[in-house]
Amino acid sequence: MKSSKTKFLALVFMLTLLCIALQWTWNSYMPEKFQCHAGFLLLGIFASTVTLTHLLLINAKKDPGNSFVRAFMLSSTLKFFFYLSVLVLFLLYGDDSKQALALHFLFYYFAFNTLEISMLYTEVKRK
Image 1 (tube, rainbow, N blue to C red):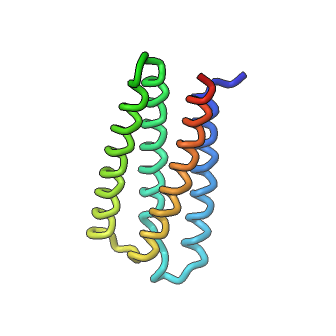
Image 2 (cartoon, one colour):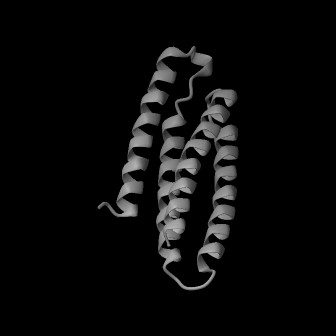
């Protein structure tokens, strides 16, 4: 039986590959003013951040008491401010369409956080 970490890493990898294909398709078929070349970098940021926080939260689950709840709240807050900072930096200094960038950001945010929260829920529920 696969461990939950291995299963999560495999799902993140498959989601990342799917998003790469969608990003490439978007950039190939959309007009130049709606293309988002920074989407690949944004995708890498989301994939690595979600993977890191998930692995840290799985390790926090092993500690006794409410350490998981505190770790989850702290990681959610830090991740929110990190994502907000990334979005502001991309919007201020990026050359891509602001609408396309915001759309890609929201799509990646929804996709990766849905995956992370659903996997965390099954992991915590299993305890």
